[in-house]
Image (tube, rainbow, N blue to C red; front, side, top):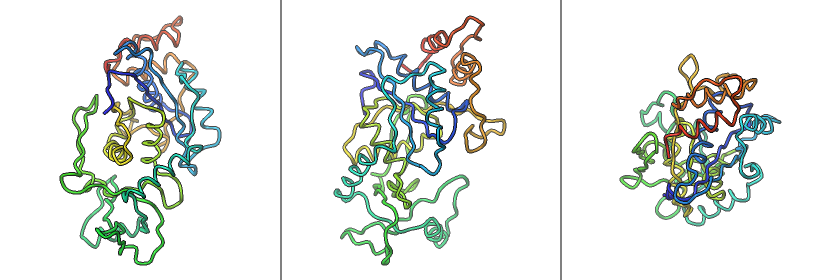
Length: 312
């Protein structure tokens, strides 16, 4: 894992499926604070904070949402230290990574549909967990001789990455907020998709390739993404890439207790008063900031939040 006391490069990576909401401002602010609060540690200067537009899932992207998100960040004083990058312009990097995995015998073509996977589990007497996904049963996984009997003459639709089995599948990592974490990749996830059946790049591959290409050392994101971490660490190991440090922040929840998100109708961020929005975001992170006054500036709120940030 990358030394957390050395240079610090962080990032905020929104999907342009609509404007930022209160929950996404919390994630943006947390990632920005983590970089800025580490100023001077280990000889580092101010560190580097980047913005990456994660638009590989093009059917879900809303035209103009990327520009709106960048303007919302700017209104809150959250300006990246380098020009943003768009995942949709980085397909060659993802293809190179997939080619490496295929050449190493770690990725394989899969012809299974969701219905195929569900039927395989039902035939085994298994039931899908509530709010969960089916663990891939390994139907198309090559055997020890590289043969894929499970294809049964079908054309592969997607590419999957093999995960280890048994004791080797148990992934351990330490989250800077949540503490020690573990997950058995084989029983919790199974071989997972790195290129989708519709030809689009899977989130797991794109994020790992981009974090390495951009030199990201500190990943700060919402707690709902914590269970992605072992898959990403496994991909990093397969590709010979460094593992950043991870910190997963508390989720902002709606009145129904569900995570605030665009999918469940979260209201766009109200930036009529950026200081109030930033103060509320900081409080969601557990930072005891004073209420802004008429003379408070965005810079004032950010400086207060940097001083209060506990994860250094």
